[in-house]
Image (cartoon, rainbow, N blue to C red; front, side, top):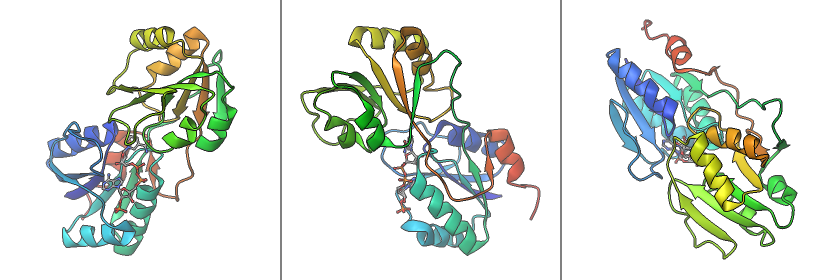
Length: 243
Ligand code: NAP
């Protein structure tokens, strides 16, 4: 069956590999922002579709029968477009979203509603490990009374202020190295989205060990869709045996 996966995540890649191994005709779509992403099996395409209607046109023009939104849980626009495209075309949509990280009993987490509130909550003098990707960097970096280690896969789009340094690194990350990084950098606060998954969760264990405060930015609300937490459940929800 012809399946389009909206990707950019580890689980999108795992799902594509599994569906290809099952003999399906799979295309994975990337936004096109990460240079040299790890390639899954099947076809690859890159770049936006032009909103929900553009995605609907693409699905119909290429005769896709299933759509999987396996983008990051904070990718609200793509999730919204996927729902609209499914409604316009009748193509079955499954959203594959990793479960959230659960706060360990002895952790030091502060639950924040959004990036702005998180930036405001940092105390003056905080030494911050900032792991929020590219979006909203400015919101944090205007806090010139704090200093930042900005970790990202791709270099920041603009030069950083003197209060921040860029650290380029690609997951997976491991507890030993995360602990060493936080210790060496004198980190007092970790700012993160609740991305979930195993690739980047080591920072939370390191923060707990070092008693570094975690400012956890809540997941955004996504439009209703058939949502599943694992690759196996996504395969089942696609109803590949039908049609
Ligand atoms: P977003 O805000 O929801 O989407 C912005 C626009 O980018 C969409 O409207 C769409 O353009 C295009 N787009 C996004 N994902 C796409 C995909 N997989 N294939 C084709 N076009 C896509 O997305 P975002 O949060 O910036 O994330 C962009 C990509 O990075 C996603 O693929 C996501 O899985 C990945 N990612 C995001 C995060 C994060 O923290 N946000 C973390 C890790 C990976 P059109 O409207 O023109 O179609």
